[in-house]
Image (cartoon, rainbow, N blue to C red; front, side):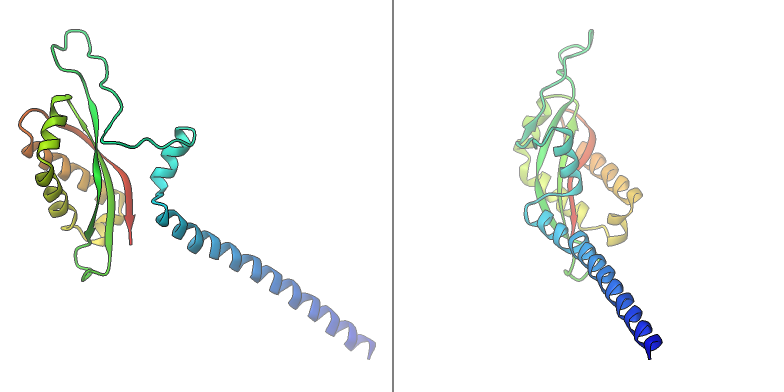
Length: 180
């Protein structure tokens, strides 16, 4: 009888320890996979935004024009140097998802001269249309693969350069990239 009691007691202890481990693991998964992503999307924080904030000491820079033109190199003429231009965030449906999935993205363009900023501002609807047409043509596989994102950046750069008359887009950067 004493042996059965000890066996029963050790089994209860084992079940109690297992339930504690399951509760801790479930809590971790709930926080890591559900609550944190919801909070990040609610407040517009993406992994890239969080990395920018961390790099800037907790500050996030906003506005249409970020940074200042770099000092011109000697002998570079009248050009002011590369300048960054933030495009407004845009939401598009993802191709072949029947409207159930969408992409919210923020994009910053690095242009070769400050004069291009004026052209981008006046071409606002054309810029928005270009973004919608380009981004909504991609499927979920293209959007989740790093090589697909690089292909999108290159296509956007090429299409912006066709649109611009006064200068060139040197680089396209995703400042926000959320797939829902």
